[in-house]
Image 1 (cartoon, rainbow, N blue to C red):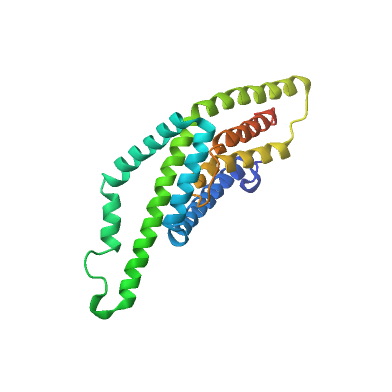
Image 2 (cartoon, helix red, strand yellow):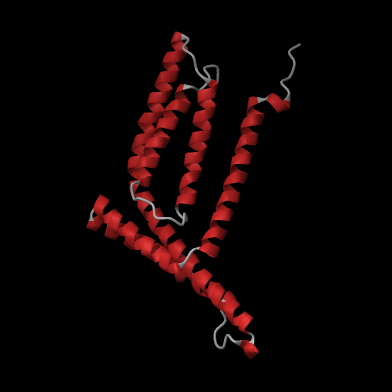
Amino acid sequence: MVGCVPFSICPCARTQGDNVKAVLITLMVLIIEVFAVALFTQKEWVERQIHEEYAETVQVMGQRNAGRIYKTADEDFQKLVVKSGLFDESYRMFVPQGERDMGGQHAISDGITWFEQRLNAFWAAMFRGFQRWALFTTWLPYVLLLFLPAAIDGWSQRAIKKETYGYTSPVRYAAAYYILVGLIVLPLGYFLLPVQITPLFPPVWAICASAAIVWLAANTQKNI
């Protein structure tokens, strides 16, 4: 009688556990990033980064393409954030209109002003996130053109190893898997990252992801 594989060492179980762990870590990092952006960034700082990133985008992609990207971002922001009422509602909740120095309570006035500054910085960062998303989606068709041949090449290498009894490394497979998961998660942080980022991030990301796909497919175990 063939014994059952214990759950603790089952590859499927480990993969599922790793996936859950990756999702939880990703959510935690994103939550920390959102709070860090809201608490520690300044509107003026973000606006300066927006202008600098736009200037770099013009240099890389040309004035016409950059203008189209940023116009799309502005339209999406207006539709999803401003016209939906989300923008005004956030200020209504934390920044009351009228007199702030309520009965001489300067602490209340300072607290309201602090919330207003945090909201200003947060929405500026969100607007920059919309711009980065618009830039990323502009590169997306070219990214997909890289992924397809990468997957075909990696799977072809696996087929050759299967026929010639070549070695498929589980260590390389695991490394490629975690690299690819990290690269999939990376753009989520990229949209709100409170530092200036080159507009060449999407193609560089695509090249790294393509290399990981080749490595992953080429070292997939031959008996699956």
